[in-house]
Image (cartoon, rainbow, N blue to C red; front, side, top):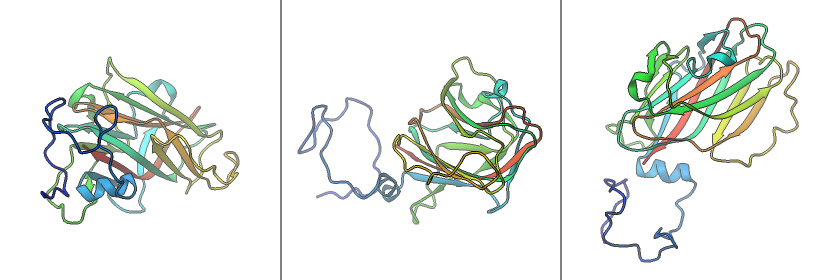
Length: 240
């Protein structure tokens, strides 16, 4: 029996000659899961993690980001420059400094098929790391920028999510974990989203798949904000 623990070369749709030994209505294989989806994708060499370059050190975002800037001033931009789809798993944001006067703490996500030209300037390039220990030579299709990223406009840009994490200004050491494609989450232990206590929030978001040539933009903004926030972050995704 052939062994194929690592992800094999992909085939185009409708080119398969043989079918699995047990299939569902649409030809999908019935198999036993190999742990969680993260474990399975990491085991085959498809899972990537992106971290802030200097651990524990924040990166400044945009000064006074407002709703009108949502599709052109992201804090995170992911461009898919490869041939595989990129599926987002989570984004974790830790607030390290807070811009003044905001009356809300909002996050939006956008995507488009504008290609590499969507990125204009700004931000810090971040290197995705494969989560399988022996995959040193495996490079990600994702091109990731973090910070005060500036993008051009895109005719086909679509907003694919919005969440008001706090109804007041954020607090230093707040941590927000955005999970994509998981609608049901444990409540935040009844922690209030107002006041000045630190908040750890788990925020469900819609599933996001970045096709080849596509861009994903993750934006933090606040009503009446002045000055720039700073953050450190972690992004997890897989490619197949």
